[in-house]
Length: 257
Ligand code: SAH
Image (cartoon, rainbow, N blue to C red; front, side):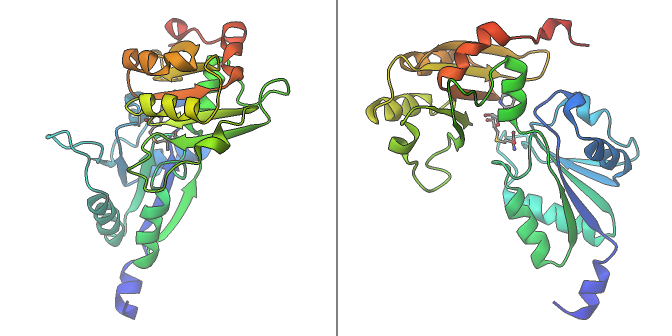
């Protein structure tokens, strides 16, 4: 990169910001400040309408969730938008659902910016696993139930490497599958084949932390059946902590404002 183009990029700046799982009250103070100050907000499907209402009214909004033909905007095109806007010396907020570094491709976007010598910062958000389980009264760890927690992508094949199913099936651990609805049959079979008990309790949390939150519960052999009734976005939680939902459920979506 030439000295000239480095200096051309100096004014532009990209804030990679996590928007949390849906409830606007779960935005961080920093995220709120940044979306109110942004020149451009590049956002995707998982960022709720309520959160977009908090964005600086003068800011340009670029939706990169889905195109008219319902295909996702290719990652390369999103990277290009970020680069172009930053090169116009604008403050760009790249707003993503949950946390940008958890199944959010945040790392890939930043690598592109780094290659172009564009300055950036990262603002963590509450990831779906954390927000949705909190609102469902399902503690991810509990001394009597789980000593560890795994966050796993349900898009097994798409993500490339296969999953270490025997390691996940040892028990005393909570499994949280992101993007798992379509792969629920495979998840159920692999966990059973690796030795996890058929009675293992499971929960599906759909549209967590929003007024439409719904929690479906059952046991491992019912997982794919439950998933067929669930609406995206949804998380699959596997482990005995999910039993606590009936006792600790505090969130009454219909009473949210
Ligand atoms: N970066 C995000 C995850 C993006 S992957 C984060 O940290 O939360 C998208 C997946 O996240 C969805 O398929 C779903 O499994 C999960 N997810 C995101 N928001 C959710 C919500 N409000 N309720 C349930 N699951 C959610």
